[in-house]
Length: 506
Image 1 (cartoon, rainbow, N blue to C red):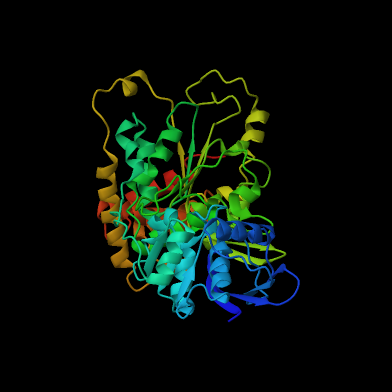
Image 2: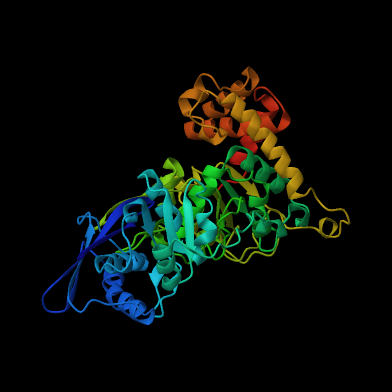
């Protein structure tokens, strides 16, 4: 037989497509033709596959070789097709059986000595294969940890091509000891008990975690803005299995699993530098559209320090994912949509020198410089920020207090309890967080009590708050009420929410 086939997976964003890798070996001048819209990395697979086969004492056909990747209309990229091409080549020569090749997928890049190397996007590839009825996958040994999340499939990790061919020919392989699922939270090194003082900012962070509200921290350098943001994932509830699958799939495509365990249950924390570009923030690329920082922070926290220092348009590019919870990137090769349901935390100095404060610190900036500096945070973006908190400089008394503040574990328990209360309230609704309550529902079913609504209507009549701001305050009030154990936000809850929403005027 001169025909061989195997299965691989092509990824377009998070969506995977099953690819049939067909090889035909025919008489004629020796050559190698690759069909099916391959990119440059895939075209180079010929030399990698040839060297790997020869160095594993296997045969390379000195004839006319045609490799077809179908469906042909779908762009294919990356070196992950090396392994299925090698398997199809050997099957076409009759050197390995191919009866079951349509029931399993092969993923992996081949080194010149036959080692099977790590590839990106293994988890979303496995999810796509499982949806198409494939139950067995051969993957690089280096990808075994993220593959364990697909417990519904039979995962066969392999170190090298020789080991794989031995299994295909004899059905024998060395059993690898199964690794225990390591769900150690690396963020536990950052605990809220390390934050001195800043009771108002700590309270705002807790309310933000309860309802999923976006947060702005504004204050002088050294006041603790970054410390609070770094400890934020530690007070969020652990990810569910479905959420962990989504997060790991995105990080797998981006190649970021070296810094995050595939089995971590802690919400991701992404902190791009303020010099990051719009493409780095929302995602993009030419032949391979990669997720940006807002997608990597899916189900977690996106923290941007020194926010006014960001380039023009960078922060405003987040406005669409803040509203929709996803980001769609259009390129010549097609449209790719990545989830981007994140909690945004911005940190900013009050002025360019950082010393502007109501306490009369030595600020060297003119009023025009202060306005221009804070004006870099656009009105439409700030309208989407729920909580705006001023972080005051610490006094000597705050710094030298011997007792520690509440730990992240204590705060997390309150957050989990409050979210469970909200989940019961929204059991029949398509949303689960207070920040997601639609405006229509706020005007009907989920109003504050009469005193709270009277307060808000009075502020609206005096033009102290906009219509969107009124809805934001009502959502925050629900989170405050959940923490306090109130069935419905009262006047005190609503006033506190109004102060947290309108407390910093930019």
